[in-house]
Amino acid sequence: MPFTGFGRIGEALRRSTVQVKSGRRSVGSGIIWDANGVVVTNSHVARGPELRIELWDGREFPARVSSRDVRRDLAALEAQAGRLESIRAGDSSQLRPGELVIAVGNPLGFIGALSTGVVHAVGPCRGLGPAVWVQTDVRLAPGNSGGPLADANGLVVGVNAMVISGGLGLAVPSNTVADFLAHGASGWLGVTVRPVSLPDRSAPGLLVLEVAEGSPAEAASLRTGDVLIGADGQIFRSPEDLSLAIDRAGRGVLTLEFLRGDRMRVREVAVRLGGLQAAA
Image (tube, rainbow, N blue to C red; front, side, top):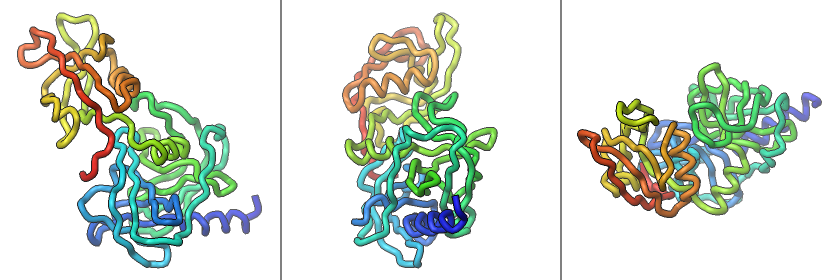
């Protein structure tokens, strides 16, 4: 690609990338997905009761979280602004290993910083459940989260989210973002778990380390220290099995089997899975 074309793509992405601020502090980046003020970012970025977005030209606008998907790490903001410079979304399912990608964000205080790399894979990552990620070697840093990942034509194919061991950057695919904006958040339970061995059972359980405040798990009276062993008659063998069970249930009801206290008796609870978590 000619350098002048590459430069134009970078400049266009910068104009469609915002800083997300909580108070006066920048907490990450966001993408102007729609010219009427819809901004997409990561769920872990859009925290705090009062948010603002700052545009490339220094203008600031108040913004509120209109939808949040904790499991897919996405949030949609509504900014009190119009006629903004929005991105063009691409089809992330067409990405192939080796393709050039471009990231724009606000890492470590550098506004509109641009970095490039190549796609390594598009698919699930070990230990992160069944979710699909765009995996790249783009160098990301704190402040890149929520910013755009674009292909060589300038089409946004992902929302940068995190860096995993080995230095790979992960982005939420643009097709996942489109589904989120069209249909809302996926089912959400609201627990942090890790596998534990159980002396009297052939399969491990999932020890609940944390129950999120205001979550469906809290509403169903699940507690830290409970051990989840299955859902809807299917035994858990890994955290991925819990993710798959939540995906199958959608925003419906999931019946969980779990152990509590002396772990001598299997208990059941029906949990109505939630999607929107309005405030963090």
